[in-house]
Length: 490
Image 1 (spheres, rainbow, N blue to C red):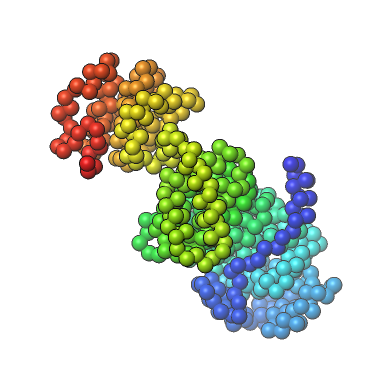
Image 2: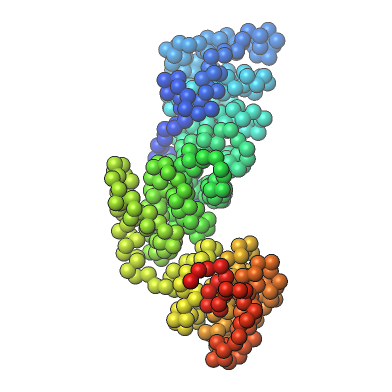
């Protein structure tokens, strides 16, 4: 699609998504809203700015008249043919000329409030921009890097509304700057992350902005935040919900729904949260995301791999448990029924090699039965050569990259079994230059890893496999047989 076609399509489907972080009835539900209510009650002394010549008489008289508690008067001004753009000019002049923090906070809150009162007022800012030859996005984007958390998040809210509520698409440069700011602030220490997520949720109601965020690798930070939240002691349910909601909205795009699991390993992270959270709304949004991953992609192989990953992550067991309970939420009930039907169908067709492939590519290795099954390796060892030895290379990469002793143990075991059951396996390992890596594991600090490395090296060196089972592996740690990993119970 050309740039002109994309802009035309954007204009045709003006959506104006709701501001989910707006204060209602002057009641706050988070810290950002509490600060907003507080600021509304501290009107600046505009006269002092006029007296100090920071603003001229015209600006002073206009802001003094506009900044009143009379919403009818504000509406009259913003509807008047000659005054409406003067109002925008006044507000933009103040944010550019005044440096006092409390006044800047108050002014951007005033701008946000006038947009909340009427979404179509965003068009006034674009009319002002054209009349006075000022890039309104650029002016506001510069404010994102000021040193006050409340101020920059209120500016981000205004930019988001301008991007979502107008008939004009946000310029590419300023959009990239805004997305970069969002991703940076998500991982930094930030008291208003919930407000940040609400902005993203507005953006992600519009497909063009979903793809812009995805192309800038923004999904990486969302998944990273969720993965990191699993290890925190304090409750993160609300932020887990907000970030998961962002991911849910992103997966309404077919391309993103098709690529997000292979690119960011989203399903295991969401499954871990699902297992750890007691909040129904968190579970509801995760199951809705899982449904999108199976429903929005038109690639059957992708859908199959996503199903397999959900099975491996025990999602099916959670669904079975929930289906046995009394579910009052019709949307959740519908999503569970859809997922259950899809996974049930796959269970009948899935092979042990499918499950093995998924486990290796997920980077989450467990001592599942296939790793120690002679039948599995006899039937499937040669299949590791498919796609230019992809699975063999993955096992070698795990040896080089993983810090998990269990992952190293299993990777060593599987390389050894591959060599044992595929006649040219030793040559493949040598050609892939993996022997040095395997040998280095003999010096690993973990006893079990060291033992599996010894077994793997023995298999690489023995040429007649019928004699291998006769070897006396007396070096194995006490209580460990050659058939089970150290530390497992019979």
